[in-house]
Every structure is written in structure tokens, then in C-alpha cells.
Amino acid sequence: MSDDSLRIALTGLRVAQQKISVISNNISNASTDGYSRKILPQYSIVVAERGAGARTGNVQRVVNELLQRDYQRQISTTNSLETQQRYLDQIQTFLGPPSKNLSYAAEVGKLKDAFAQFANQPESLFQQNNTLNSANQMASKLNDTAKMLTQMRNDTQQEMTQSIDRINALA
Image (cartoon, rainbow, N blue to C red; front, side):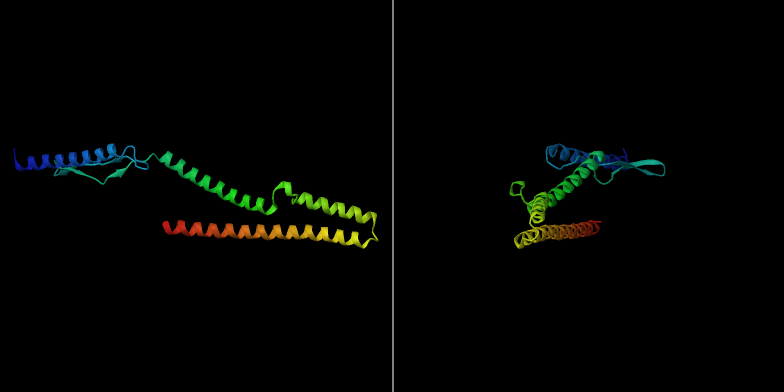
């Protein structure tokens, strides 16, 4: 056997040793959360149309692209739903629980009742003030809601801008 044959055999043994190392890491980390299987590609070395040994490429992670895409989509959906829930909770907190009678329907009902009583006694200063107060409360509630929704929209735009900046920084 010539020195060339020994060198060629030695490159094959080194490649086999590196592949065994990668396989043993795969086996030992099989139950580790977030670990993905790795492979080590092997290439032949050819010089002047003759085999001159073997070499390895870089270790490559094996990932199921469909699962990865579905995972990313689910994260996106979850984040979207959490954001919607956060804003809906803010609106619910602002409007108060139904048992407190703070809804728009309750305010419109109070205003309707005030106008009905005012229609029965148009000369009554008390009824005039009561109707005016009910109308002011309704207008105030609408204005406060508009301010809150505008603030929520601004907060959403700011969060989107920050997310885009993070994405651009990562890219």
C-alpha cells in the first residue's frame, strides 16, 4: 500500500469520525426542547479524475419547513389575538360592567326619559336643566370614547412602528 492510499483511507476515517460525532449529538439531544437534528454532508475529493479522499461540508440543521411555517403562523395569530384582547379589555374597562348601567343604551335611555319629562313640563326649569344635563352627559361620554379610541389607535400605530423597526434591525 502506498502513502497515497493511506492518506485517502485516513480522510475517509476522519469523515466517518466527524459523522459519528454529529450522530451521537443528535441521539443525546433527541429529547432536548428546541433541538433539531443535524447532518454532516460528505463529499469526494477528486484529483485528475481519480479519487483522492473524502471531506465534509458544514453541519446543517434539518428542519421541517412546513412545521416551521405553521409554528410562525401560530405565533403571529396568537400575538394578534392577544393584542386584540388587550384593546377590547381597555374598552370594556372604560365602558364598565353591564350591571353598572353605564352603556350607551343606558345613556340614550336617560336622555330619552329626560326629553319625555321635558315634553310634559316644558316650562319647568328643573326639567330643562335635567334634559340639558342628560344631553351633556351623553355628549361627554361620546367625546371621552372618541378620545380613548384615538389614543388606542395612536398606541397601535406606535407599536406597529416599533415592530417594524425591530424586524428591520433583525433583517
